[in-house]
Length: 191
Image (cartoon, rainbow, N blue to C red; front, side, top):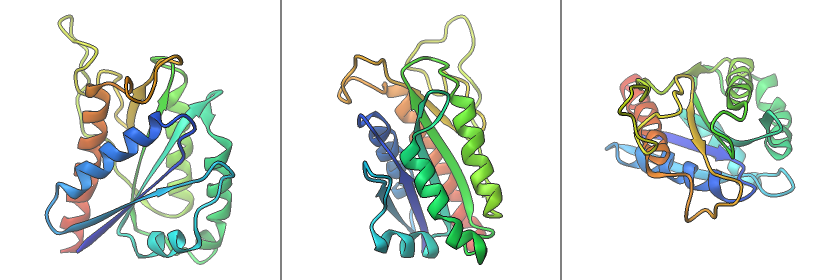
């Protein structure tokens, strides 16, 4: 059974919805076990979460984009992962990522690049969305990959929206498809 870990921070619970969509895509694939690991407001994970990450075949990272980068709570988690880095415990595990911000752009690419760099530090194998962007004249805001993310799943939640209102269906479906793609690849490579 392929094991998928989705480790994320969510300050206002919009990124949590995105994480749940990634999780749904992962559990939709037969022969898998997917676990959501929420980083708390102090930037910590429960001790047993580190064991889940160690046992995972794939780790999918998620953070909101704040001020052009990941939340400090996610960075604290990343710094704490240096223990796993030192022994290359996550080497050759599959990795992917997602982010959310209030603006359509919001410098989300900087957060995705941060997540990619973290994965490369751990000698992981990065998987992008594999989705073409919805970029024609007839495109609608709720289309899959409307924000055009190739390196990771991108979402937008207006600053005055509740988690019940945003991210929208297209962004959540993009996240679900990322979770599904990563999991299918994990199942394939597990052989």
